[in-house]
Structure formats: C-alpha cells, structure tokens
Amino acid sequence: MTRPQVVVIGSGAGGAAFAWALADAGVQVQILEAGPRYDPLKDYLLASNGWEQQGFPAKVPIAGRQTHAPLQLLENRWADLRSWNHLTGHSLASDRRSFLAYNHVIGVGGTTLHFTGESHRMHPLAMQMQSRFDVAADWPFDYAELEPFYVEAERLIGVAGPSDPGVRTRSAPYPLPAHNLSYASQKLGKGCRKLGLSWTANPVASLSRAYDGRPPCNYCGNCTRGCPRLDKGTADLTFIAKALATGNCTITTGAYVLRLLAGSNDRVKAVVYGSTRRQHRVEADYFAVACGAVETPRLLLNSSPAGSSDGLANESGLVGRNFMETLFWASAGLHPEPLGSHRGLPSDAICWDYNAPDAIPGVVGGCRFSPSTAEADLIGPINYARRVVGGWGRSHKTSMREQFGRMLAVGGIGENLPDERSFIDLDPNEKDAFDLPKARIHSHLAATEIERLDFIAKTCRRILAAAGVKKVIEEYGSYDAFNATHVFGTCRMGTEAKTSVVDSSCRSHRWRNLLVTDASVFPSSGGGESPALTISAIALRAARKLLHSI
Image 1 (cartoon, rainbow, N blue to C red):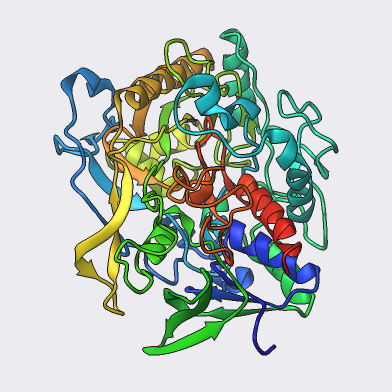
Image 2: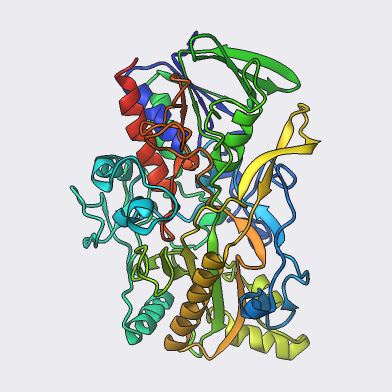
C-alpha cells in the first residue's frame, strides 16, 4: 500500500474498530501502533509453572510512562475506605492518596489484551447527565442512535449475554448465549437475593461456544494475564484480524507517534512517528487518534500548530480536561464452604440495580456490582499463602488445604463525575526518549465520588455477609489509591465547539480531517459500565459517518 487515505494511531478497542469499518468499505488504512504484536500461543504463559507470579506479560513497561501531580490528603472520617489486609494491615501507609498505576497495554489490541471481557452498553440515562441531573455533559446522540453499532460490535467480537436486556433495549439478541454462573458466583447471587438485589449473567467477550473459528472458554479465570486459547474477543483477534484480511489495511508496530503536523485550510497534513531512533512522516487524507484518554490529549498537546502553544484541536481549551477515572471498591472474605472459587470467568455475573444515575439515595451517579475474586488475583496458591493464610510450617499447610478455593470477593465500580481538579497536562520537567513532555495525571476525588464509593463499599460488605462470608480478610479501592484502567473524557464530544473538543461524529470542530475514536470523547463515564464495547460502537459509528466524506 502506498499513500494511505486514513491513518489510525492506536489499535485498541477504538482504533481497531474504526480501522476495520473503513477497510471493510474499501478505504486504504494504515494503523500506527507504538507497541508490538502479541502471539497468544507463545506470549501468554498460563501453561508455565510460574503463571501465578506473572501478570500480563507486558513487552513495553508502563511504569514511568506518565507522571502524576500530588494527590489529595486522606481524611480520618473516611478511614473505613482505606485499603487493608488482615495479615499486613493498611496497604498504603501515607496520609495522602497514592499513585499506583494507570493500567494499560501498549501493543496491537491495546488494553483489550488484558481486560476481563466485560461488554457493556451504556445505561440510556447515563448519556443525559447534564439535562437530567445537572452534572457532567450530555452525549450528542442518544442510546437509540448508538444501538445498531452495539449490535455490530457484539457480532464481530462474539459477545455472550443474557436474553433479558433490562433497560438497554436491543434490536437483536446477543450472538452467543450467556455463560452458566460458577458455583462461587451462585453463592453471591443467593446473597444478593436475600438483600432483594438482582444477580444476572454478565455480557462478556468470552465465547460460551465455538464462534468465528475460535474455541469456547475453559473457565481458567486468568483473562487479565492474556488468553492463550483465543476465545476472548480482543481487538487483535477480531477487528484487527478482519481489517488486515480485507487487504486494505496495514499495521506498523513500534511506531511511537510524536506529533501531528497542521497544514493549511484547517487540515492536518501528516503524522510524525519515531522508530528505533529514526523519525518517519506519513501523509494521509484523514487522521484518527485512538491512544486512550491519557495519551491522546498528550499527543494533541504536543502537536501545537504554528503560532500556537495550546495544542492541536484545543480551541475550546478542553483537551486534557474533564478527566474521569475508575472509581472502584472490592471486599474479599473466606466462605465456610469449599467453593472452588479459583475457577470460572472473572466477572460472569452482575448486579445492575444501582446503575441508573439516580439509583443511589442522595448521590447522583450510579454503580454496579460483580464478582472480583479473579480480578483480586485470589485464584492461585501463592496469593493464598501471602494474603489469606497466616502462620508457617505444618499448620500453614493444613490451613492452605482447608482454605484454598474458599475466597469470595465482590467488587463495585461507579460513576466518576468530571471535576476541574482532575485533568491531563504536559509535565514541565519530565520528557520521554524523544525529548517530548510526558503526560501528567491530575486526579481528585470530590465529596460526591467519596460518598458514592462509601455506598459501594458498604453494599459489597452486605453482599458478602448475605452470601455467608464470616470473615472479611482484605479490601481495597480508589479512596487511598489511583489505580485506574477505565479512563475517560479528555477530548469530550458535543454539539458546541466552545464546550467540546470533537463533534458528534468524533471529528475536531476545526480540523475537519482529524478524529478522536477512544474513551477520550466520553462526556460521562457511566455508572460502572466497562467501556470497551461502547468505545468500539462509537468508533464504528464515526467510521460510517466519515465514509460520507471520503
């Protein structure tokens, strides 16, 4: 392929879906990906003896890739929200909120490579937060507009989900039936029902039966370490593979994009990327940035057009603003019965009862609850020995035999409303290997976020107790630590150029051949929904809109 018509920067849920939709329509697309390819059969080490001591086998380290500003002081009145373990005490000793990680993967497929596969649609009311609840901003289209693209994304990924859609109306069923719940999840379900709460199968991009040449899930529970069976619907195995198969798409790995070059007539003319210390330039008709809600604003802020120091597409001053992070809590405890809780999908069930923006009494913004035993990494003997079973010697061995497989954890994720103190900017002091400023993360949990988190924590404890857990042994959450995977909002989409970065088609209000197709464009975070499916649906919609211009 010679000169591409469209360059896509990033190959995660948004970049991959966008590239496929264009390539499938005959458009010549080049994907630039900073990271490498992963070979599931060779790189994911679940068959090795040391599987439990290794997380996702990141080929490009994320530590130090971004910096962070000082986080807020912790308050004694919220001491019950401090992370702790029954053997080691408080996990974080500081009186100030700690920065642990912005968890993401740099490689073909992006962070879908280590996600648990949750495939959620937004709650329709969560797309109207400003007009209905006077917070955040409204989406520039409604749920009905996005619904056909949800259907398409679910089909391409292979989502298994329940027959009852709830408030998320559907024009077509899920392509695959829901997974049966594990025994441990069934115990949590009994606890929910005692409390008058629902507990239903979670829509997931893990195959419940063979689909599209891939085998069904074997329920090992290690989705976050990378799936060697190929049953998880990661972007590399779905959208990227299908895009490459069209013959209209190429992908360049190890392409660390440095800047976008602005041209005349309010159009971007080229992208510059570095590779093995050399710089390359690629021209195209259109450019789509899909680097995630931290690195996308960084790229735009590092790409100021001539005569400006404010960054590209930043006429509103909102690039990097309205940053929303993962608001989460998890409680874990020992159940008196052997559950075999090391088996099963990490998040095979879900409670949506508090998902609507007005569902939590006295707090605007919803949340959801789901199993989190696997995500807490309590599915192997080493972590039982370190975090669950105390002592040493023969008594330790006896306790290990008795307690392994009995840990039960439930987690909640909630809305994170925009706050002027949470944003992404360029670090004035730290630069990368190409002498460009790194992204700096500013994070602040407002009182409403902490109140919502308190509700989530108390509800997690109630569910565990109702499920039969007698002893809580570990809890952790967002209050005392920034440890985010789902991040949103730094290039908000909207109808007005003064109050948003891109329009309803994800195109810059000024630079009409520049798009953003990742979670940066979210005007609100949703009440705990995992964003990958919505990112893909938005990207598919943006691609179809763009086809009218090509």
